[in-house]
Length: 244
Image (cartoon, rainbow, N blue to C red; front, side, top):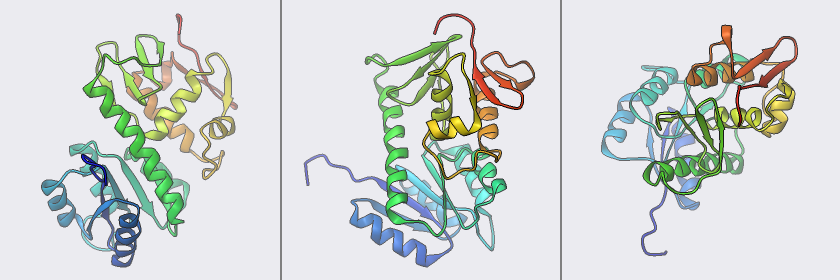
């Protein structure tokens, strides 16, 4: 092992001890250091004792604090990448996860290699965001619009003040898809094709929820949207004024 190598640390929060044992073994074989917690109290203790590169959180807790409560607590206090695990695959569950600010959503039972690929994608993006935060003067490939800058290399959104606005992986993918196709109307299905996520139905509310969250972060209200316009019955169009 190379000098200076630091393995990625993952916290698995799931009441299913079998899942925790499996993920600890599987991810350990892939070079991760894995800690597990079976309920909210142990999750809080783990977070107080250590730092993590990613959290895998199950939504279905039969007793005590549920996964939604734990996810809200995580997002309120920490900025770690978050992937939700759930035994449900309904539209409402996906919408809840998006509203909670999850970076991804994986349905049980899952294929371990697919979960691993999604974990690496989320962590890679988060790592680039942290790299930018520590070295903001480094050359960046940007899309600029209405005082905002979308950093395509580090998956970051910067306000005119220089403040970094956190985007989840899904939010970034959708905003990038729209911003790179300025002035074009995109249907929900086209957006899904562009972001290469066919696990969602183009007829559910997932894209609408993401657009709503992006608008709020941009201060672009749906009633008077100036950046992301709704084309009724079709989809959305990115249409900021001024050069990009």
